[in-house]
Length: 318
Image (cartoon, helix red, strand yellow):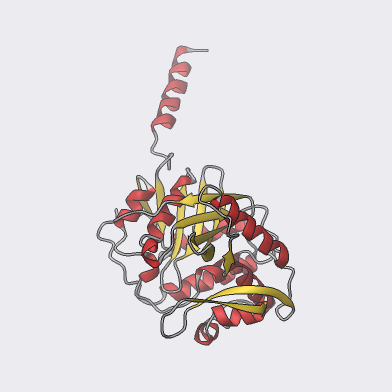
């Protein structure tokens, strides 16, 4: 091989090796407020296995959210490129947030569970009908006095109407196509709930106990998970009381290089897209999201990926 060609190959290899890629720790974030970022995200979703109907529903929800003021201080954020912000690590991204995203001042609209239901249309399924006796469902409920309670319900519809108050059901009534509304009832009831742990559960066996409880519930509900991407659920545990509650949902898409994660930060917070190479970045993100949960009595936090994997989340300290 001619020496000049060898030299060219070496140069190209060095450039590729030294290029700033998303790398092991780097994270790219977007709140989908720019059309360029939204268009790119819709393409990622369609390429990852989401249907045209699902992505259209998602697009409408994002555009409705971003049509009103997004009250957010970007003072600690780097300069964006086409609606994306690049950080050296997930911890750096969390440190740049002016507040926890779910506390963003904005009208309360589409939440994280409905976002997952919308995007997984046809690939995340439940075998129960809304009005069949398929419980008991242990429903997290916070009445107007602010006291958290867990109430049992017999059907998916009963659980759905308790966990979603009437004003929220009215606000989101037209957000999903009619073809998805029964599925929404069953999936929200199955995913957004509380679970009891055996009294014999110890800290050493806690991850296994949480996963076993979830799998038993999903089996009763006839839940089947997507094959091409992962439903990510976050669970807050009170070990002394031997129960936990599933409080958050998102979607994780594998890509040719790394992963893309999509979520809605509660009802008031923005839609979020994160790109990263190392899955551990997502656990750091959750650690920031649920910072302070120990003050509410939660002792442990876990993230599950479909029905195949569970990871502990470490709460980040301020």
